Length: 289
Image 1 (cartoon, rainbow, N blue to C red):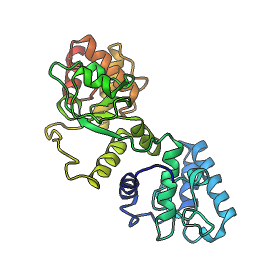
Image 2 (image 1 turned 120 degrees about the vertical axis):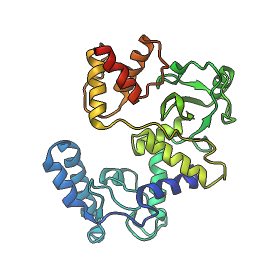
Image 3 (image 1 turned 45 degrees about the horizontal axis):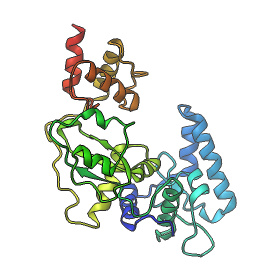
């Protein structure tokens, strides 16, 4: 009904609640009231608390099931209350959109409704691991660079989908030493569910596992350590002090930090992969000496 492939919905269900086995036991109203009182995202959680009250006002039958995660996400696919109000559907036709019951039918259909609303394109692959040509210009992996599949093929990329006119970009989850992925607009739709490349990549790869035995024909580097939050703050501070503004030093890798890293790498004739490695941090520290 919504054009979202079943393997994608199964992947979301598996990642969110282990196929319904871990839906959360924290009372949703209590969770949201606590987070609203905490104040760090007061406006957001007050709005979600209001939406939760509206759900119960419309259907008191949910009161005994109204439980979920510590952040207020509910049901098989972990909808926030406002998401439920905007996108939940009664797919089984019993008169109510029930994402909490033991049956996942309404919940999975609601997830499909959500993705469809946020731009999911039927039959378009979310992405694929690709082979980069020798002497590839890694500046082409910047997030603002999008090309058709045909254009990427002309550059020399291999193992791309057959949708020649489909637009997409490249990501390097572990930098130039790790696998490269071509990602489509459907990858962006997955990020509307959870705004994280790692999340969307997890959903995509798991969804592939349901349809092919060759879903993971690549190797992740095992010698790369992620930066700690303290190290990330140091990296952000060093970049900013050296003229590459990260717009804050919060210890969280985001688009501003990636752009700053890429600018630093370009200035220093390094591979422009935008990856926050320990080697990059050491390079920054040496520059300060």
